[in-house]
Length: 23
Image (cartoon, rainbow, N blue to C red):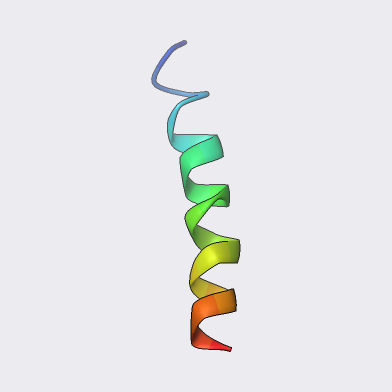
């Protein structure tokens, strides 16, 4: 259960950040 919620929020955070930096 810890692995499921951990990778989910982590992937969502880096996704918007990378887009902002690339933009």
